[in-house]
Length: 211
Image 1 (spheres, one colour):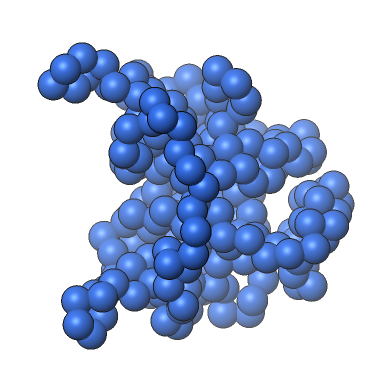
Image 2: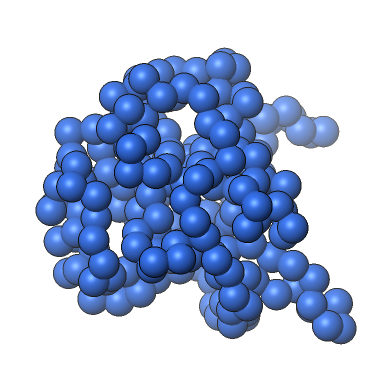
């Protein structure tokens, strides 16, 4: 499932309900960044403010030698009423702004190729998210749902990309069902950003777990 998305300055519009604080945060960043698990990025809260959070909920899960710490970056919408996600879904919703998101497909010579998904009109992609206060800082997780026509040939899940009409109902807690997104998307092959240096994980971290 989605394990990378892109943020940065974008001249195209935000929906009117999104206050200028988030636009200003991204404009002043001055650079385009690819966000990957455990990295920090701005999310939009129901009061319209933006807050930096790290991507991924930390969880202690059972392992062969005892509990292990895992980072869970995606939350399936069909599991939102389970114990792990219920409280955040009902009490702590957010929007995740993105210029694009990435999925991977097999390429020539067995090399995986990232596909970059954007809106057809190059407007912002706003993805449903949930958040919680982690041990050291707040963190968020991205909701995933069934794929739209554009995504289904690439992956069997996709981020829960919201239409303008869904933004306020989602943040206010009245939107509770998620069908494949109606936001028109397109995709093109992208450069393999995984070849770039990655941040060193904590010595206590275990491999990232994706829902």
